[in-house]
Image (cartoon, rainbow, N blue to C red; front, top):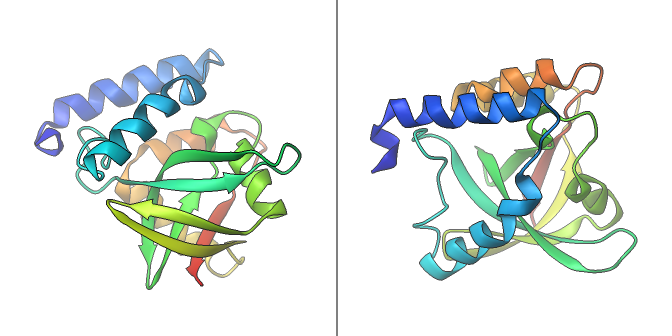
Length: 164
């Protein structure tokens, strides 16, 4: 329903860009509520980015590299055959998100898409895969191009989650 409101996508994008330019990253604050709503609704709530029909969201479980604590992050994804890819954009902030470091340390994990839980193995996209995947993310939501520019020298890693 919200996917049919392009004005809403503009508001979401503008708000995110305004906050990011000022070093405000609200991801962690909103994550617990997002994850709870997603799980309770089977992805009907929180399964898509408001105002962006193509922008689908999965839940990524990851084990803390140092803490050993299991955490869950809602992330935009694109399909890559039987696999999916996620971007470690952190909305263009200067450092990689914690989940990226956690996946490097513990690549075997699970994702939830809607009500389906899938066991996956994470790997960083190859140099050959990167350009096509980046185009997919920018096509899904132009915000990724802003994130790339905002990240400056940091190259945003793309992670492929292969089925296991």
